[in-house]
Image (cartoon, rainbow, N blue to C red; front, top):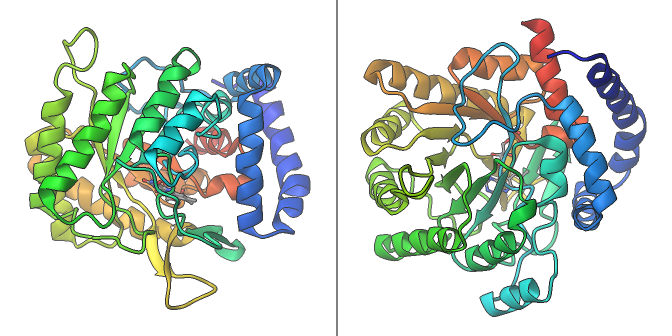
Length: 388
Ligand SMILES: Cc1cc2nc3c(=O)[nH]c(=O)nc-3n(C[C@H](O)[C@H](O)[C@H](O)COP(=O)(O)O)c2cc1C
């Protein structure tokens, strides 16, 4: 759909962001910008007029958001699905669960952006949420690399924990977007498979008991930014056990128990071709609907070569594209129907199209917001249309 108003708004956004906002934001560090953004989002969430305006802009420029669940991820001309990836709307960090729950009870906004971000950009995956709250890593946790339009982060899965997140979202259920996803991460540092499974299922239960109905749950099997990343979750055996148990847990969780909320998984770049093929096979066997490829790429930070942080944006694009190619090849060989979401350096129409050509059914993005502004997904959508 091409409306003159949409074209006008997107042209104005491009000029304003690239000529005015971005140079101003880039005068400071990525860390400062990130912290300011979270404060701004918190303010916007509580301002009814601002939400109204954001929704109007969102409705005008975003083409594909309000499909009813479950997301079909069916591609069509102009119907490419672009979803804001996990990590933007994930909530504040807390030391412990009791403090996080008290914050919810006292009406604090513990998930900045929960209302304003979907109002403007449409589809959003909230999280990652872990079983227990996490404060995340101290110090500088986010960097930009302008020449390659990349980001690097070691936020360290900062989040309020699944129980407080579920209580907070339930408290605001009437104002949640019609379609959203919830990303649950395996707790870093937990190596015992039984404990790991228990934590994931308990996290899911918090959301389900609060009668929240996301269009999908994502199990984040790839957490490269924590000091204690166990790294072993992505083996076929581990993924089979976790996903099988989660899918059992999700049976009958939608539409008066006649359907289940779909399960997606999110995996890393730079796995071997065999590992991608094995994961695709596991997903097909147990009934995972979608694989998000990929999370960020662990690389040394600009400040300290001894510490790794996850690279997103331009530097991630080729490895993520490679992952999608391996997954698509495995899918073609097995003939299964598992969907693939390309995520990693979706920066413009060309990078988005590269994922679609490699076999992706839909796209997720994060870093492009920094380089092209809040309406980046709508700009990319427009570029795909113009090139198509
Ligand atoms: C600051 C930041 C925090 C993130 N936190 C999470 C997270 O909590 N869970 C997750 O699954 N991915 C997280 N991600 C990864 C993104 O969802 C995405 O997979 C990655 O950035 C690649 O996309 P991009 O190249 O468009 O940035 C985070 C990314 C950034 C930049």
